[in-house]
Length: 363
Image (cartoon, rainbow, N blue to C red; front, side, top):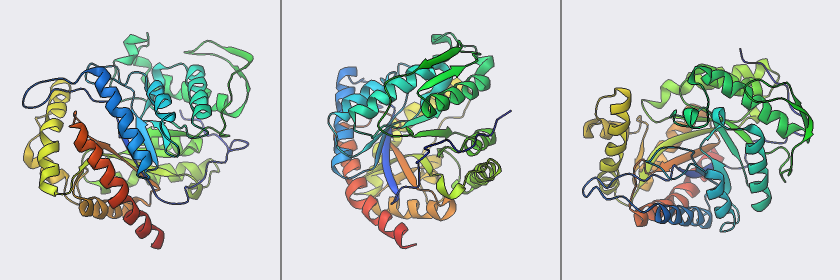
């Protein structure tokens, strides 16, 4: 059962002044679809820091780094990556996408992000989720049978740590805490915590009852079918006496941008296919076809792959459905050529974002 949570004292998280556009990455390290070559892990991380730095320079609002514990990624410690990026950036918000809270210690999560907040002068965010992969559970000694209970309990503790310098906690999956202080404290009060929702109504309800911003992942199917999640979220928020008008909603999707739409698709598809077919073999999905991919990048599909005008049109189309305040794109499901990722970020920041912000501001 999800327990409602009333507004916290000092909860000053409000709607952003303008529509926010950003990028997220899992620091993919997947084989080249032609040569099978793998990028060196150190080079992959250096490239990632360069992309975050460029995203800041071209005026994007958010950069998120996902947490994964698989050989396909080099982002098992996203806060370390974000801390490095904090020293190379000035304005962009630094988030996870997501922190797999179920297999983390909420005390350490809070301390790490409070430290990141201090290093970045108040730009840290936590996007808390249950994760799309399960490797972290056996790695850190957790039972998958406790999948839901772990997340609910640890999210509740994380919010208690955020609300108060000294915390008492009765224990459960994590040992009890008896009136202990947790330090350092962040600049932001409160430290922003978003709840990530993949595809379950219960997750949307949880976010609304807790009064947390919701990041909804749309990585397959038509966007319209996700509209009920927002209805559930907003109804739960009202039930718990939270004003839905003050709770930001973000949409996280896959995408890639190039000056030419066909070039964007031709560059992106083979790398995406490698990743999705590998996951498909693990989960029993059918192989991804080019026809399916082309359908997914149409206006009513889930993937933002095309030229700047197409990305603008699709963003505004989804905004009419959801009325959301933030959009994050994963610019490469597989390892993309670094120069082309940099170009995609440049186009997103200089061609897409200004038009989208202006159009939404006028609507």
